[in-house]
Image 1 (cartoon, rainbow, N blue to C red):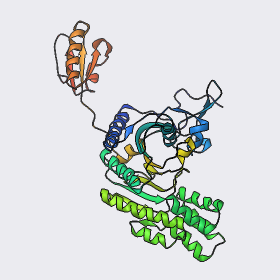
Image 2 (image 1 turned 60 degrees about the horizontal axis):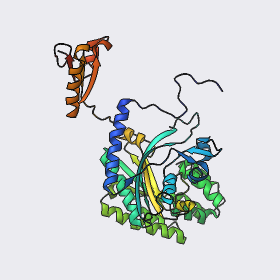
Image 3 (image 1 turned 90 degrees about the vertical axis):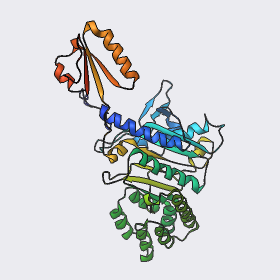
Image 4 (image 1 turned 135 degrees about the vertical axis):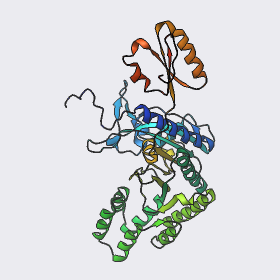
Length: 394
């Protein structure tokens, strides 16, 4: 292994410069305000968790976990997602709290990437978890909150695709007969490799009718009419239950008045294995080819922490949301007070008054400047405390 260059960063890690940081900060604040307005309380969890608890429960591939050992020899992981840590927290620190529990978070998560992956290994998520409510109303609430949050952050052109794990599983298992064959098809759907899915189906030892049912899954996109088409493909109770839930969900979303932002996508499969029901992901305009937010129902994860509860939630990738919005925030005007040694106290007093009025003020000793004119160009206003006062570089 060669020694890293002095300016190299670990694979997938990025620096955030001031302009981008300020943009992310302001967008994050808008997301948090919206979530608080819906009654979600913000929490924080540790960056490090035990591998045997949160690491195993997270459903992130083992090779994507950042692992290290503590002094007692326990294997730790950098948190790879937020849902599993929050499940641990609800089963421990909040074990006395009554359900339902509404929690919000903004945290960095870590997933190791391959050299050729080009994906970030560290990114910030902002999201919510609604724990202890198994109703369709809860699913509708988190989807409506996600829509409201994206709009408040400044994203206007986006769509939310909604699917159901139960429907996909029911159809695949009914047609191919066992979990291994169904899992091979699910992999194509997760990767959105629809060409590969079609080719795989064509090579399966199935009747033309069953092949048609599988290929018909790829066409189940759109409004409520997509559910009617879906009902013609499924022949099991599990599939019918899933479609009934989605029909109820559509009514909830119509009540929120957000049906223009949502569509059904019955072949939607997310990478988290703990999802058990409704799942969804959001796409922002024409700028991104990947989802910037996702979520769904996970009714079995809390059992792993000995406090069973039905739950649903979502997470927004802050970096992708910033990219989708496509503009930086307006930079606040800054005043620079340049002072000489004899006028330091005067300059500090002036800066203190201006900051008390909400202004951004930089204090700069004249002795530390090599080019006063070039320094002045960086600020909207320059005040000299060097025996005489100038403004605006006059």
